[in-house]
Length: 195
Image (cartoon, rainbow, N blue to C red; front, side, top):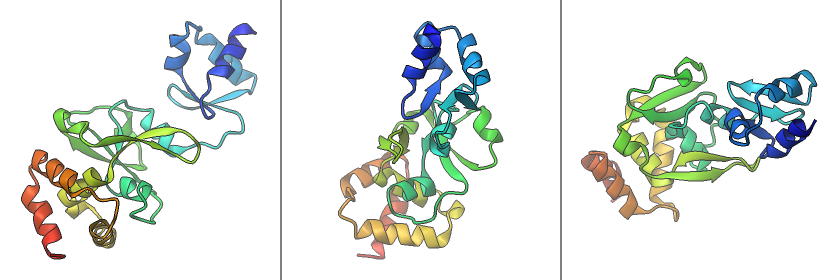
């Protein structure tokens, strides 16, 4: 019983990963035992929730890869620059990624070179208290300009206009990201229409 109560104390905001259990030198067998006792539930490979906790798709999907970062229209939604709740989640992973996110029907994958993947990542706190990785607003704007053909025109135009007039924007950071991503001219041209 000692291991079971230790496991139940390890849950953060209702979630727990197999990795956290093994890091505490607790045999995985006790996870199975807790599932059989109906105290916890397996929601994804290596991810568990306590009974009666609402499943948070943001947490579940990100737990499937340490390289997964919420981006594009999903990041716009999280930053309050789109009011469309994601039906499909935009996630950026490193180029060459081969993993379970490719099999998810509710995920649009975008790929970034390893050296650009970490550019502009922030920790974002969900209402549930869970922390997810998402690109900051300025990097997100660069991403939607880069991926304009894959972005809904209405969402794109609203986000660009919203960003231009926003107090949250950091133009210096925007153009620094744009330079690193080789889309400086594209970004400048996009905002010239407001000039």
